[in-house]
Image 1 (cartoon, rainbow, N blue to C red):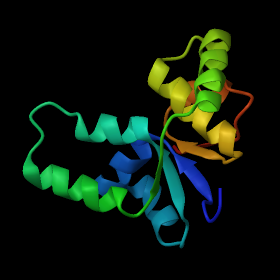
Image 2: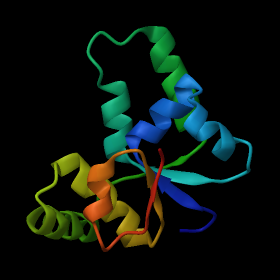
Image 3: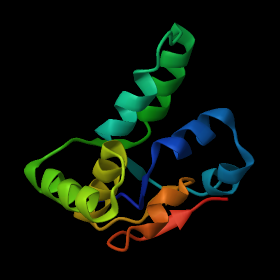
Image 4: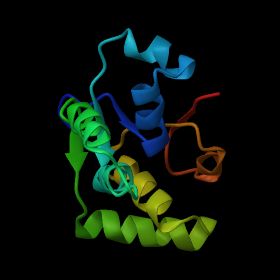
Length: 123
């Protein structure tokens, strides 16, 4: 993808919003990142979400490229789900990173087993 350095998992976005120490080092550099439409749904689909939370999330989402589903991502996700028995959202997120050849930053250790994607695991 043009101009995208990394692909990030939903938990990284949550860490950014919370000012978590794990992402403080990352945020001082000027990286551009993409996310799956799944992450947007996970963040905004929270039950009883407040308008303030929506505003904070939308502001964060404005700083990244949101990538939707297509047939290629769908087929890669199916393959990853079959091979690794991972959750559907994780399969779609990993498939999107693989499709665009981007490293995936995550704090979810379940992604470590996915050999097809360069995983950058946060502690």
